[in-house]
Length: 113
Image (cartoon, rainbow, N blue to C red; front, side, top):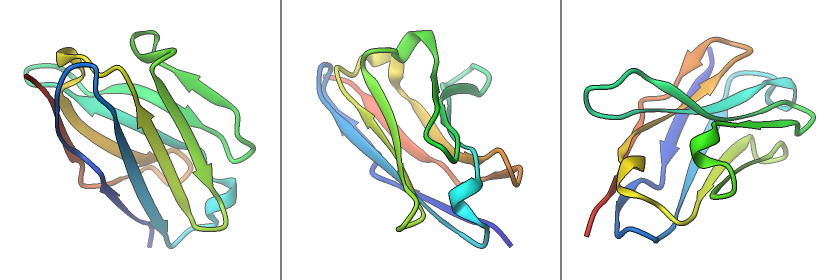
């Protein structure tokens, strides 16, 4: 049984930074492709970034150059470093295991002055 737990969300001012973490258990994490998605109010859930077991990454155009996805296979963790945050980044952010088709519960990120 795969289990994903996100943390690190919160309220931040425009231009600020946050680091989201996702703790994974119950799978062979090192080979899992992991992703961060978000759902803004009134919008559909969208891909933010994805990382393969080998470290290959993909980013949404809206976050390229500002967000960085990374992973620590020894700790079964995946991270999303978010810099230069904008109000339009406000959303619930979800960790997702592509390999196991499993979602975390989400963590709220609010960018506001």
